[in-house]
Image (cartoon, rainbow, N blue to C red; front, top):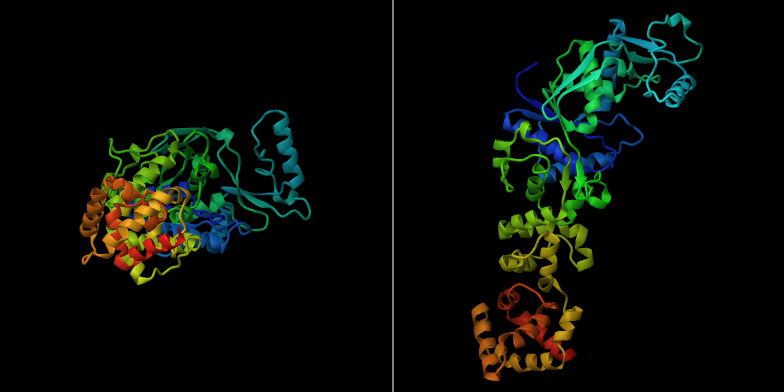
Length: 475
């Protein structure tokens, strides 16, 4: 086996790429990049009934969106079934496996007896040393591993430490089912070996599998990869992560308006730490990542923290890049806002011009889109309730009074409109807010927006005056 580091991410395509899977993929990717190695992608599609092409596409799309590239072609486990069968037959030939003719009824009886006596549910080894000539008529055998019955199986885990199982507590697991299909346990070992995997990084729900897979490696005389089993992610309340906590697919986070770099940064800090540092560029993550700094306790997923981090990334992003990012969520959230992708060039231009003001308070791209409502709203604007209240009798009268001063401007920019409105307020003995607030409501349909005079500059003279006249004609 080559000394170069090879990791793998091996999802089952029975659903979307969930947040725990995304973190596992990220840790594998970072470890491989940190050591100048390769990360391979294997789709574990042996469960033919539950594996779907849609789920495979969602996993690949999710990884691409997160910026987690893999090396070489995607490997599909089911396509390698012949190789898995061949290895099972070789174990049979070497005496490290045997044919088991226990009937489904016998296996059910075994389980029921164990349950009644409070023993672990294990196969009792009844065909381990029996002659196949005693096989009952019409029963198709499975192939089972002849596992050691004495001593112990040890996993030296980079996260969990030394984990020991007594071999008497592990039974002879099935390698090949009676229909000739390989089991997950066998397929994983053969694939990891054939792919040259040197480091397995996966959830700690696979820790017992590591013991069983270790026994298969030993039976085959193959080197066992190094292991690192990472704690699962829990909700903020400490319970196992579920949909109510945010156990959504990566595609849902994209549609909720999170930036891939922010989600990557958030995920790397779920269970791994590097001093007190919270914000990492990709280069910093790669340089700092190591398995020793992964804790043994479950990490807690906190939406508020993710939102705050995403807001930080939004504020630090290039304005044009943010417009591109906003455009990517338009297909999923634009219809209800009267938007479709691609965005019209004039709207892109206005969004780019307004972005410095828009991004200051936004925590997600959806926030950005909503606070940019005034840029793409259809005339006449639909006002929210607070804006309507501001444009009562007094508000409308002030709009009508300030309109001629704005119409008289020869230049239209933030400084010019601010000068005109301030001069008007002073002449009328009003505070600036008493005229600025009705203006904001009429121009944006809301009571909060980026700075008013920036809004007027971005909308331009014709659109701004048109919206004010719309409002006065409705009053």
